[in-house]
Amino acid sequence: MMNEIDFNKAIFDAWKTTNRTTIFLIEHIPFNVWSEKFPGPKNRTIGTIAAHIHNSRCMWIKSIGRGEIVEVPKRVDPYNASRREVVAALPRSSRIMLKLLNACIDNGGRLPSRPVWLNFPNDIIHFLSYFVAHEAHHRGQIIQLARLLNHRLPAEVTDGVWQWITRLKEAK
Image 1: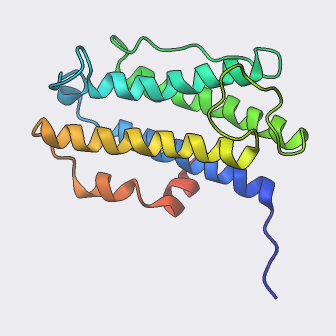
Image 2 (image 1 turned 135 degrees about the vertical axis):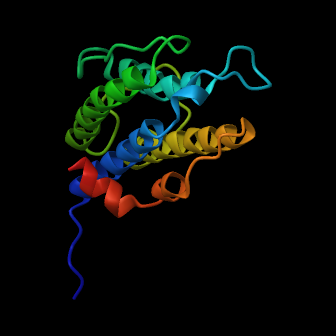
């Protein structure tokens, strides 16, 4: 007989793994590549993408939590935030994302409020999946942009974003 899964714990652990994986990657971005501009959108850097991850969480927390269910974390300036500032901000927004996931569980698996703009179904699994996919997309961008800027990240880093058991252990 298979062991039953504690779905609430699995949901929280999946988020913790995603958050730790994002932090792991950002911690390993070389300082000299953080602010290097790349061809394309004006003023975009690896640093602005990293800041966007935190700021996107803040936007959704504000929209779904409406400042009543959970506190909204402070955004970071995408054009001036250092790697250290973004790495410090991500655990703050992650803790509040966990509170929002808990509010979803308390609300029968549904978002505690429906924001004006919602592009995914109103349930906890889609909510979690959306954020996991969003952060994975940007982690891929960051790795690719580092390569394009001739700063290929070490294999320990690029392979490390796939070591989810390790990242979850680090998150606990």
